[in-house]
Length: 354
Image (cartoon, rainbow, N blue to C red):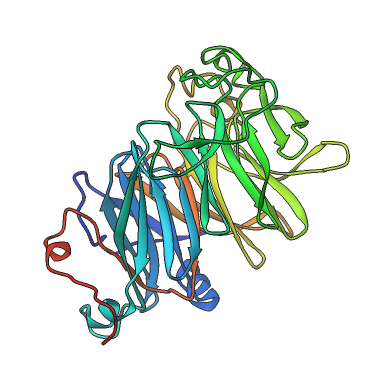
């Protein structure tokens, strides 16, 4: 599949950014009427991937270790950073005033910040009007309350205490019918970073309501999602998109991908998968995906989940090596996101309608 260079990204960037995309990716985003939000903590960026005039245009905004993303609707999304969670709201009237005139159909501005401290916040999801956050440091799910750093909630039954020890590296969250239903962790362990020695094959998938482990021996699982009547999981350590049979816990490979898989979103027949170039380190060293292929990729791969075939891609060649989260903005083909390193944010004001 051939690649097309992406036009120079708009927005601030301290490091060079270069990417290419498959020729059909702009048409796919246009026909679906969507854009993508992507977080990369390695590059310290929140990215919007958008189509305009038959090309992909990226927008980069700097944040301190951006990870989890939760899109509520066209009006709101949340971003988890090193010690804060940011609430963004859409200001359509501002979008209509942005240059070039008539090009932007949404403008997201930071409105609130909640200071949690560094809880190693990973994935997040909206449960009604409340954010449910994977609190990796304390090995639990949590919510927010203005009187506290966070409010601890559910934790795996094998975790015996609330402690700043990252005992099992709880990381992924799937909400089904408005309730937290499935989580992923890198180990069934209850000691300080006890998951590390067996990270290559010690991963688990847990059913939240019952606390039961329904699948074991996964390689750094992440991004559980319930979509199209099936439960999906990314197995980062092997670079695979899996389905999990809820009856017997059997994992079936739908697609093998050329990178560490993390970050998953569905739209229609498409699965948007984030891939990372892993480095040999205490965190990523010794994983099966590194031995399966020498040239690992970083980017966004679009998979037809019905066949497992790659249909489009966006590959980052400079400036971005790791992807954390991918979320889809529906009905927003060309959004703006205002960041703090722009002068505009100092003089843009949103007031109620007269």
